[in-house]
Amino acid sequence: MSYRLIASMLALTIAGGGIAEHCDAKPAAKPATKAPHKPAAKKEASVVSGDPSTWIADPKLVSQLDQATNFGNYSLRLPIGYTIEEHDMSTDRAAITGYLAKGAPRKDDTFAVIFVIVSEAKPGFAPTDLETILNGNPFLNGKTGIVKTDAESGAIGPLSAMRQYYKYPAQEGSTHFLHGFHYASVSGQSTIIVAAMDAEPHYKKSLPLAEAAALTLHN
Image (cartoon, rainbow, N blue to C red; front, side):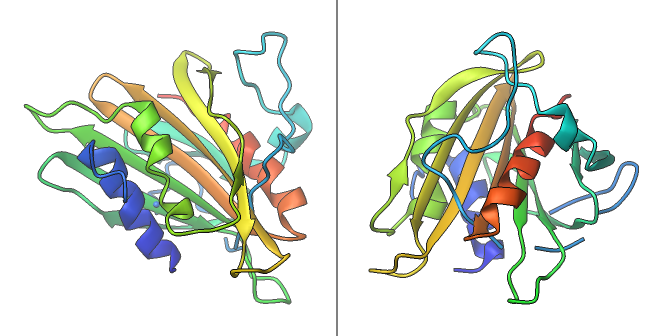
């Protein structure tokens, strides 16, 4: 399944409410570069906070992030060197922009990815709730051997959010897993998803950095 198709499915999830079967960017300050994916069913990302319900990135990882990039009414700091594509994914229910940020290609032809999808529900339509967004996770549709954490509720600064970590075999019966996570937040009519994926063994380095990026989110 292509990353662009997954981004489209993510857009349908946050726009469609009940469409549970079913990301790219405009640099505000600096653009980013390229990299594929992999989730973890346990928290492997470096998150530090005095309050367990408030999620704050490891400062050592934040130092590896670029200047802030605007994603609609939101902004966050992507890892240095990531490139961004932006796509209009609007539906009759919501104005949606998807952003796909890619890390640099590796020697094994893999690369890390971060998806950002911003949705503004149109008049007469309510934004999709966070539980529906996580339950409609398109990365996991049709996959077997999925291992995932329970969804957690917390906050990124003033934004209420939910997150979940997961992994699944790259191919049926394979012992090689893909790892990823989702963060989602709803504020008024606006919804944002920040998701990342990478492959073994690269996810151990790329996903904590991607999570640090997600935790710089603000509007």
